[in-house]
Image (cartoon, rainbow, N blue to C red):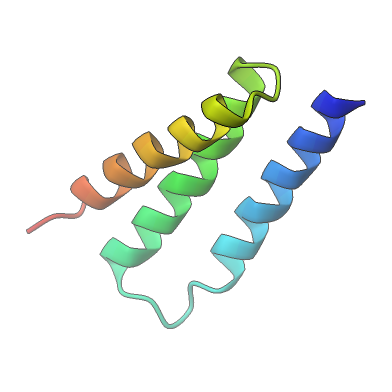
Length: 70
C-alpha cells in the first residue's frame, strides 16, 4: 500500500511539474523534469523511502540543470 501511494505521488508530481512548463526557459524546464523523474526513480528504487525519493529528486534536478548549461 505504501509503495503504491509513493508511486502515485511521484507520478502526480511529474505531471504537475511538466504541466506548468509552458512559460519556463529550457534550463528551468529540464531542471524541473529531472527532479520529478529523479524523485520517481528514487522512490521506485528504494521501495518508497523518503530519503531515496528526495535524493533522487536532488540528483535528477542537478542533472537536468547541468545538461542545458551554457
